[in-house]
Image: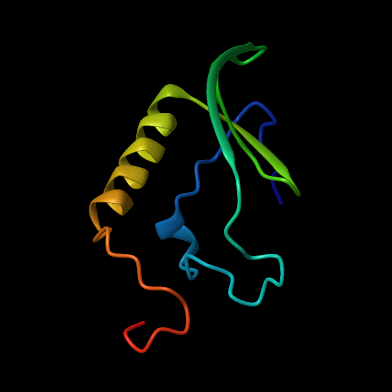
Length: 95
């Protein structure tokens, strides 16, 4: 078995994971306030984009190289493009 180089980062995309976009079994899943921050930072491995999502119950920060940040941007833009803008509440006969 080979040990991966600790300086090497393997990008995994949502398409690679082949998992549903929402974990419906998570009892904490709910709409609520959230903050998204994207800040360039200098690290020992070079400049990265620190992408942070903060909610009342958790904070998640990932460090992305520029190309990976662009891939995330494209994935988010694609998802936004698929939204209809129509809001159907849970429990509605139309949802």
